[in-house]
Image (cartoon, rainbow, N blue to C red):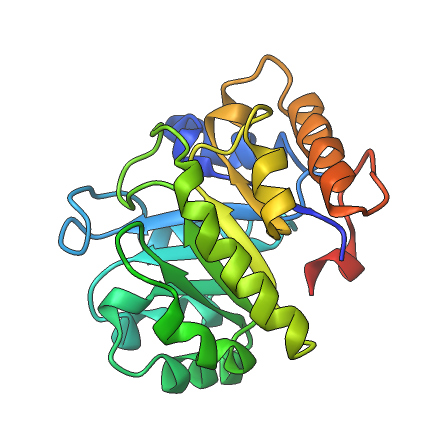
Length: 235
């Protein structure tokens, strides 16, 4: 699989969200949307009404990352609103397999996020039921944190299990991904990369995405691309 670059709109200008998303069309594969509820994490960001409205502004697939309590109640609505991939946290969900099935039934890919302090081993058996597993390379809840390379061991564990079982699952990393860190994550086995400040803090977001894609592809052994991966890159 070719690398997926998913700019995080948490780092964008919230007063110009529609424009900020359209600015990366044709370059980004996904747009990463961080939903925080000020309960599961100590921050409050976007919610379902904003996601529903923003969905009308772009054709880029939405990668919704739910940092919220009670995802069983709220997650399917994001799928119904048109999110391509909906990821919920293992720490907030009692039955990840059931929720993954509900998300798929609602028309979205299902993702499971693993926070900084949570071991990944108990969740490796769930990989066949998931489309994406998101490994946090920071502590969930705030943008702009420094990348923690010691967390890449989780990525390696997931990659080994996925390869042994021939699973078609995206291994996503989120936190501190930039030009000086993305190669480490790709070498560990990640193939989807959330980048906030590295894209929206750049003078040219499209050029920044192209650079990140080339760096990741070089370590993944995939062919680099100057644009989005297209429909085949969405799986």
